[in-house]
Image 1 (tube, rainbow, N blue to C red):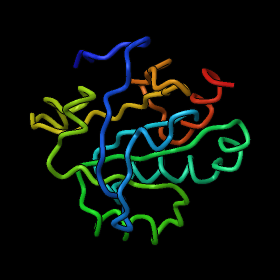
Image 2 (image 1 turned 90 degrees about the vertical axis):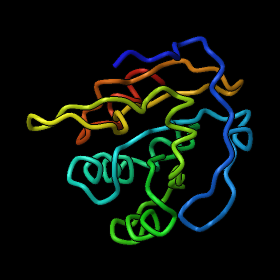
Image 3 (image 1 turned 90 degrees about the horizontal axis):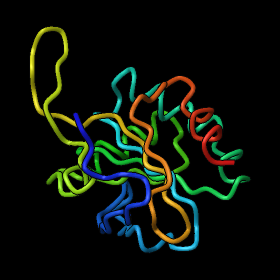
Length: 154
């Protein structure tokens, strides 16, 4: 999959709801560094590893001035179960209509175990205080994702 967004581009604006039904807009975080991580599905092994790695290092990310938003096409209800099961301390944005994943270019054809299907490509965008994409991580190491983030953004 080839991303249409590149470092230096303005991050696409969005407004959606999180696992608590609260409205979340990217513009709410202007003036902050935003770690925007897209993942395929709540409560699946690799997605859980990624979210829990970020959870386990959340204080360090916050100490470095970052806010974290997770996004998948799951519903608020699914996100709430995921948050509660794993004690996730950050908002999980629900995108069941795929507007955000499509705006960021992370929705596309995937291959897994010999079959092809449409889905979310695991990708993280590091967005600076001015709303500009500084880094894009396409090869996410789910069990050590925080290190990838901090290596790019200290």
